[in-house]
Length: 309
Image (cartoon, rainbow, N blue to C red; front, side, top):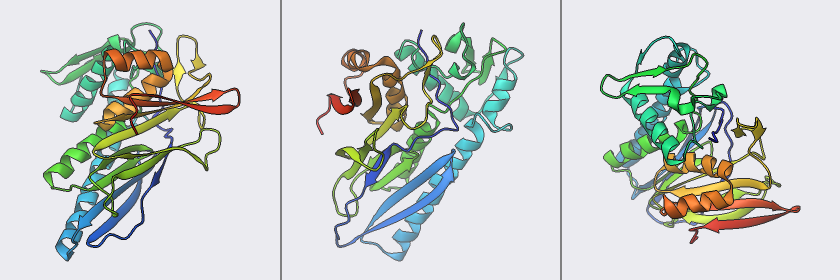
C-alpha cells in the first residue's frame, strides 16, 4: 500500500492567476484577501451592472466565505490543540469521539478516496503507520463517532481541507445566486462563470524550475484546478520507503468539477506516477484532466491526459 503525507502547515501556492484586464462595461470585480489555513485565500466576485445593493451583497458573500474558511480551519487543523481533529487524535486507541456533521462528512469522503486510490491517499499517513493505515479508522455514521484503533494513529486532513472548504463555499454562493467568481486558497482554485472582461477565467501553472515563469496557461469555467509537487517544499512522502515521492516528475495539475477531487487526486497522481495516473483516469475517472511536468534531463516536458485546453 502506498500512502501520502501532506502536511497541513505547508501550503504550496502553485498557481499564478492571470486575470484579463480588458474593460467590460457594466461589470465590476471585487477582490478580498485573508490569511487562513496557513496560507493566503483570495476571492474575486464579479458584479454585473453594479449597484450599491449588488456591491454590498458581493462583499457580504465574500465575508461569509471567509467565515466558513476560518470555521473549517479551527476544526480541521492538525496543529491547533483545541481543534476537533486534535481531540480525535488525542484519543487514538483510547475511546470513541463524538464528531460534528462536517467532520463526519470529510472523514467519509477521505475513506472513499482511500478506497478509490487503493490506499495511495491515506489521511493517517502523518503517523507513518506501517500497519492499519486508513483501516485503523472506525467511523460510525449513525452515531456520529470516530475511533482510531491504534494509539499511534493520527489523522491529518491537510491534503483535502482546502478543497473541501472551497466546495462548501461554492454551494453557499449558489444559494446566494453569485454566478461569476474565483476562489483561490493557497493554489486550490475554483472558477465559476466569467471574469470582469466577460471571458472564462485564465490560470497558469508555474514553471517548477523557474518560479517567476509560467509553463502552461489555460482557461477554466465552472471547474476546479490544483497542482501538487515537491519542488518548492518537500511534503509528499511514500512511508513504505520513507523517501520523498519525487524523481523526474516535478508537478501534477488536475482539473475536476469539484475542488476536493482536484486537491486529492493531484496529490495521489504525484505519488502514483504518470502511467498509473493515466490508467486510473482511464478506468476510474474519465472526467478528470491531468497535466504532468517532467524533468527531461534538465529540460521540462509537459505530458497531458484528457487535456483539451
